Length: 271
Image (cartoon, rainbow, N blue to C red; front, side, top):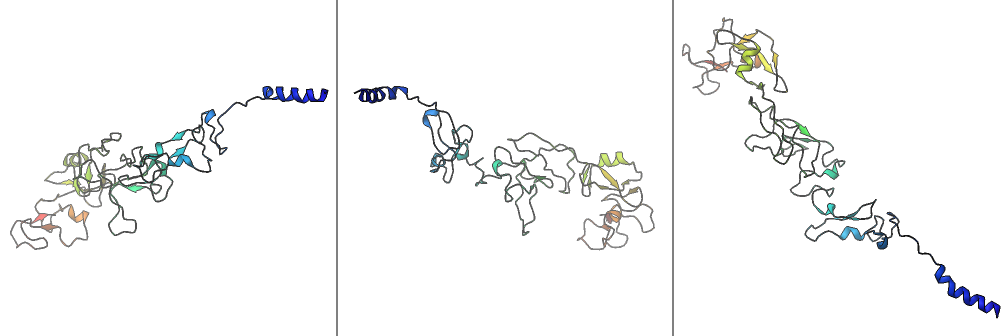
């Protein structure tokens, strides 16, 4: 009888002694504990969180925050999903992909027909494309950072600041160019070295378009458009030092290029 009473008492009291464990977020255990506030688990074998994206984004894959076990819909948006989608230049979560931006991107693009042919980046002013610079940074809006881009190398000396960044990016303007190729800012060239008798400083443009480098030869020379000097004249056309291997250093602007002007025509000018 005593034994039966003991069994009966245990059956009655045992449920009252059961203690419910506290529910805590435990990301990575493969179980979604709703009572702990988990919306997902990154190790969920069914990967249910990957199917939370709207059907309007085909191929988009949702994610689960590995520290909070909350659904993350940010990857549902094309920009930031780790892939370079149509209308995107890059993706900030794909910076380690060799096919994306790890190797950088030339602002002016690469030559057509080359093995690594790449279109130029769109510049703020379509009639004035980028001519130099490269970028390797993808911005949060999935466009390349334009701040390293420039216009040096297009053969025209833009001696005034020009915007290089897009309207959606940090504003950056170029420094006024001193020169570009054989195009020189006349005021800066004159300030670099004053020359008399219609001459100019015999210089070439530095690679950054922001300074001059002295050329071998005389300190001064005759600029394009100046009267072609006689063979025994001391002053020479700048073209002779810029293009020493050229067949002609003078030409008549009113004749077909390469045509020799008649003797004594007086129309021959420095190239």
